[in-house]
Image (cartoon, rainbow, N blue to C red):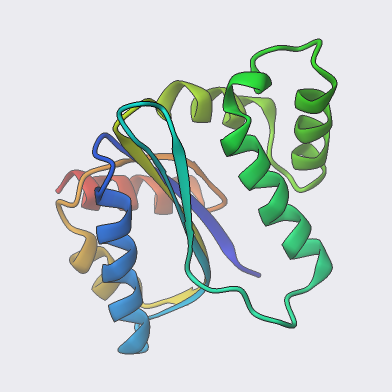
Length: 160
């Protein structure tokens, strides 16, 4: 089963730089990425999404998860309004995929102008080599399906 990791950066270009590092690691067979999505919010608040690839035979469940997540990112301001039907529908769909309101609150609080987010689904990794490559790249883990110990190790590497 893949592990989800979401990392926020205070720089709008950093998530893409880290994703490029991860892709190089994938080329060297040190990590197996199912997907890596970057969301960038420029200084005017406009959101751009950069998806690594879109396999033709992607399972419907996974495609629905990514589409809903993208909706949550793009409709970020709507999510704060509990009475809005669209926000409630997105929250409900994400909850069905295991993403809770706390994640959405962290996402909204973190995803400010001039920042970026990296969403990664990892099938397998060689932890020592991946952590060494990510050492000191910055960022804050805002959500993950890693164990608490793995998350702390990743955050320490990012802080590096």
